[in-house]
Image (cartoon, rainbow, N blue to C red):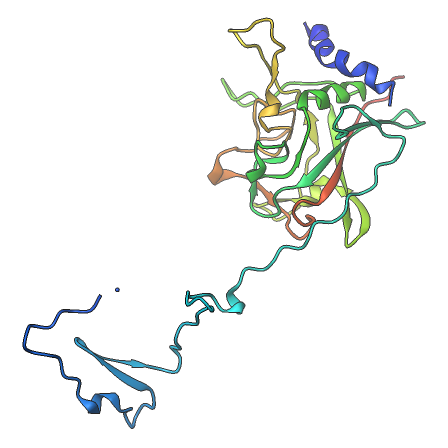
Length: 299
C-alpha cells in the first residue's frame, strides 16, 4: 500500500522534473426662560457656561468642539489615524536552474551538483501580526491565521518533496492518546527583499513562541496529510486534505502536509505561536519559500 500511495503523487510530476441623545419637552404656555446671568463666565472659571432645560453645563478648554470635514461629518484628528501599511517589496529573483513543476510556476525543483535536492514555493505575505495556526496555506483558505499564502496544489508539493528524497510519515494522532507527527525533517527558509535588498533567513525567525518569547525552536516534519476518497464518486482522484489550508502548519492538524513534531494546540485560546511582525515584510510582498529535506546519506 505504501508503494501505491507514493505512485499517486510521483507519477504526475516525474516527467516534469526532467523538463523545463434628545431634549425634554416644555409644558404649553410656560416657555423656558434662560437667565442671562447663566450665560456669563464665572469669576472662578473662565470657561463658558451654557444653560439647558435641565440645568447648566460648563464647557472647559479641555473639551473642544468636534472637528468636521467639509461635508460636516465628524472625523478623527490626524494623531489618531491608523498607520499606513508600507507598500509591498518586489519579488526576489528565481535562479534559471530552478525547474518549474506547475503551469503557474509557483513550485520549483532544484538539484545541486552535490546531490542536494530542494523544493521552492512562490508565496506572498498575507498576515503580519497575531496568533497563528499555519505558516503557509493555499490561496483562499486560512489567510486569517497564516503568514504566507501560495497559489499551489499541495498534492504537487507533496510529490515534489518525494522526488527530493523526503519520506512521508504520519499526521498527528489524538486518540486514544496523543502522538506527534512524524516524517522526514524539512528545513524551511524564506528569501525576500528588505528595502530592495535580497535576504534569506530561516522561516523560524518569522514565528515567535508566545510562552517564552523566543523564535520557533523546531523544524517541520513531512507528515504527508491524508487522501479522501469520495464515496459517491469512487472513480474520482482522491482529494488531498492539505488543500484545505494546512500546507505548513504550526498547530497540529490531521490534514497537515508539514507539521511540528511537538504538541501544539489548535484551540484559539491556546494557540502557541504568533507572527514576529518586525521580521515579516509588508503585506503582499512576494517570498520564495525553500523546503530542504534533511536526508541521511546512504552508505
